[in-house]
Figure (spheres, one colour):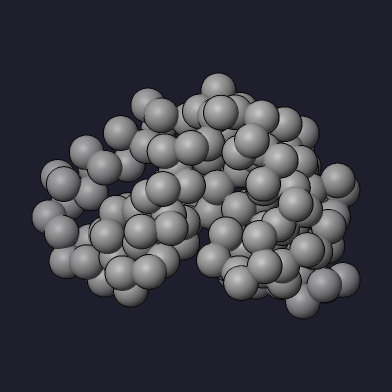
Length: 150
């Protein structure tokens, strides 16, 4: 099962945020099958910004972190088709443009899951279901993904 990871999960895995979420994100990343994972390029751009502005890391360290994530998972570029779909998501579902683009790229890449805390948990669009890894009730989709990779 293919999945995409959003910026917030990577930021927590980088140690930015509260200890509970950082721990969950690190454990999750270690358990996910890297050969089925997709990182929308938008996510890596946002991560670079978070690392340099919020975490105040030097640009060279942010670059190294982004490149390490790109080495760990497939990176998917944004297409014009995905951007058009994102525009529809902003109108039809009131999503923020850049969040909508991440979801649209995940759908374009045939992902079944988008792992994020930034959308409504359980929201499904074009076959992609949003899964919040920090929710109190674990997602059956995410549990299934993790059990199939172990």
